[in-house]
Image 1 (cartoon, helix red, strand yellow):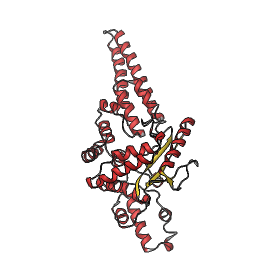
Image 2 (tube, helix red, strand yellow):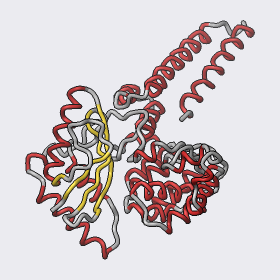
Image 3 (cartoon, rainbow, N blue to C red):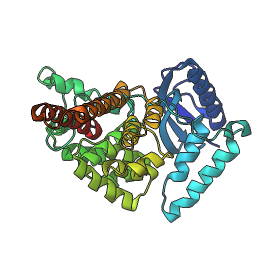
Length: 366
């Protein structure tokens, strides 16, 4: 029998930390998702899937309401577990889990399996824990910038004031955090690898591995290539470095999300517009819109822009249309300008060139 525990769900209609049967969790997610969809609102929270011995089988984030991709927990877990690539020796466990999911799900909740059209929040970060949302990533030379972490952050902010309270072990951790602030994550990684970690620390270690370029180690902690690929696509790297990392990861752990993100970086707009079966994040919706703009399919671009609450996506379409209309007007003006009026023609041509530069900026900006 399977059980679920939710955490960080802000809506009180889902009880955090309560041990629910998988069937009850399906009903609860289905009902709240439907209610919030009707209200035009959304929220999300973490969940953990356990067996009856409390062994962790799967963990993820479920989004309720207008930002949701799945109608209930059954569809999300089934979809994601099916897409996880496993070693042969682990495949039997995967098949067992899929069988349990099927047997414990009421038939009525297996319907409507097609993914709904999501409205993706511009602030969405794929499956980030509350801890990770408190981390700020920046260009700290080699990688990750931390501004707060556990209660140790409080010591670190005012380390001198608390010096007498800090033990030798705690000082070791504080030194590791300080080094991580400066872009040296190796000490913190080593400390985390040696301890009995919490789930939040596992999630942190995944991000540290990715910052260090240890993509395989990050995957071994999660067994979720879609999660790792999505995190790779969101790293603060140059397009070329990111493309190389994604290609390497895709070669050994192919996912639809990987193919989509690679096509986005390669500016293969045809592939981007044709791919629909991926986990939609705000950057992927934006990439879809940009691809349709490149192909001059403004109707489709507007349709996809409606799936995110990020105003910059719609603004990009509007600005593109304004600039192209201006260019069309200037070209018409050029046609009507006498070939003998060299000064006037040069003035119009310069205006066209300036608008074309604006157009390139719109098309090639992130």
